[in-house]
Amino acid sequence: MRKFSARRASVRTASLAFVSAVLVSPLLAASPAAADPAADALPAELVQAIARDLKMSPAEYLDRAAKAQELRNYAKEFRAERPDEFAGAWMGTDGKPVLAVTSLDAARVVAADGYQTRLAPINADNLEGSLDQLNNWITSIPREISGAINSVAIDFLNSQLVVSVANTPGGHLLNLPTLIANIKVVLSPDGGGPVERRPMGGDTYISAPTALDDSALHSVDVCSFGFNSVDNAGNALNISAGHCNPNLGKANEQAEVYLPNVRNLSASPQVGTFVTTQLGGRSALDYSVIRLNDTAVNAGMDQPSVRGANGTTLTLTGVADPITGAPVCKSGQSSTFTCGYVVADRVETQLYTAEGQSKTVRGFASSACTLGGDSGGAIVSGTRALGITSGSNAADAPNCNEANTALASYGGTATLGIPIRAILADIDANSGGGLGSGIQVRTKPNVG
Image: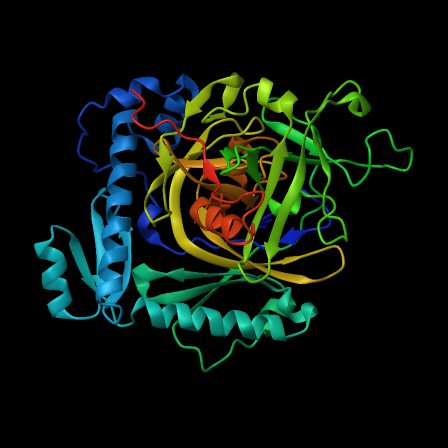
């Protein structure tokens, strides 16, 4: 089933259709990149994941990630100067950056600046406006109807919206608004069952609405730590997924966070507390802020690193933005290091809380395999922080090999990520000068 399954049983997210042909095949035509001393600092397991999932060397991976960020910066400046002519940007299958425009004059400018270009019939502003119209319509219809719509994404390569609809009688009867042009409908499988909830080692944490030794407690929630961060006051923080907070939506949203003691859960040591949580709403983000205690800090969670397979670490050197075609890798003890590409840099989907409330969540999609327990974990591009894992269509798979086989005919594995820059900006904007003000991901620039 192509569903982004949240780690909490009370939150259901929808599936994601692959919206672009840019990532159907690996980077087979890439030119060899120059040797990069930073590649020697990558964990061995990450190097293996890059070769296995991306079919490239560590130096090529770092080079393509860097070029993707250069394209992102150029596209941002170009769009600010020529908003009516900008129609999207992505990394091509040959590893070269492409920027779409709506006029020949703009194409000449882009080509003169050294980028490949493509003419498109619709600019990015109009596509995003159509996306907003469609999502407004989705939220206005009854849940028994809207539940057939899994996700909506912008496909800049083909100047259209892609709507993933469950292949059910309800999905077949769904009438999309005829006033919104350039919509492509993709049918995805329906069905499935509950996701297994089990504690993981390493970067996994557990939480519960009450104390772990509460006799009325019947289950705990399992997620992964994301990026270690710090605010202006020096508070040690970690950014994870918002849906991981078991007290989300309650009067007091704070909940304790523990490192799991798998032999005796009630004896699990506390390492922090949820202090800020966001799911949907004005920002359309899915994130939480965990205030870490001395136990966590003394264990090393004040360091600029994320953990992957067998406890190996990747040192973070900065922060990145998602752009279609950029290579990405994610950490997690459930699925270890896995890699893929950004397949859509803007995706919106509906999440439903235990109370039946619909929440619109906005993020990016990648083809990296993510399993149950990885929610909230770190997604990187090169050695830069890119986002945190919100959900996956492979959360209930026992391993990524089986997930890749089972989902191959549906476009492969897919992960919904929440951009870290948007998260940091939202935390700071809502801090009121207190906890989280000036928050930054811990990094160590110029590693290697």
